[in-house]
Amino acid sequence: VSYASAETMIVDLVNQHRPDLLLILGQAGAENKVRIENLAINWRDVNLADIDGYIAHQEIIDDNEPMVLFAPCDVCQLRDEMKTRGVLAKRSNTAGLFVCNATFFRHCRSILILRCPWFFYTILYFLSKK
Image (cartoon, rainbow, N blue to C red):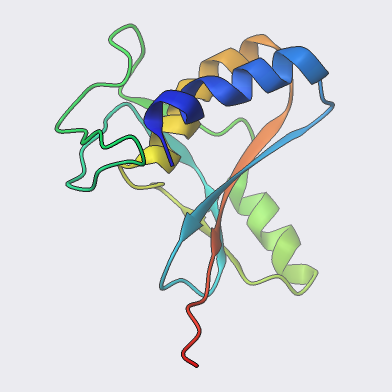
């Protein structure tokens, strides 16, 4: 994943296609539930390089925005509805400080301006031992 491409790609695609709903997915290991992200943090800080080799170190994503932006829906209500349908889900108050959070944060404002409803989920992945 790349900060540079991830932080511009979604807005470009939304502008081009004008969807009725936008579902943004992130990925997390060691998780057995779908996480519905409740807030995005205006901060990048991780010791991992992205695919471009960039390492974010204690950086504000956007100086013109608050330090936290909230999801545009009742995340707990959405979680509860998913559970009634048999989906293991939980509310999450952080998408971390890597590319998932940066993407979520960068697009919170721009997507709201476009008046496109959106949700950010972090999905699990499994590593298989063969």
